[in-house]
Image (cartoon, rainbow, N blue to C red):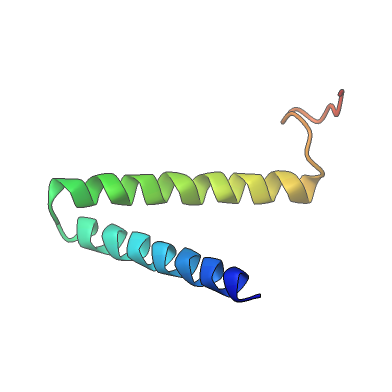
Length: 67
């Protein structure tokens, strides 16, 4: 169980760092911060689309579930 808690804490710290990078980049931070912010935004969009696909029951995007 402690390994799972450690992994969860690491995930929360990474997400918080990504959020901080997005805020800092919006305020005009250094170039590397803009890269981290872009990676964070892309990861968030991928997670959102994966969640949306799982709610719809998967599929290939056009409504046909041909496997």
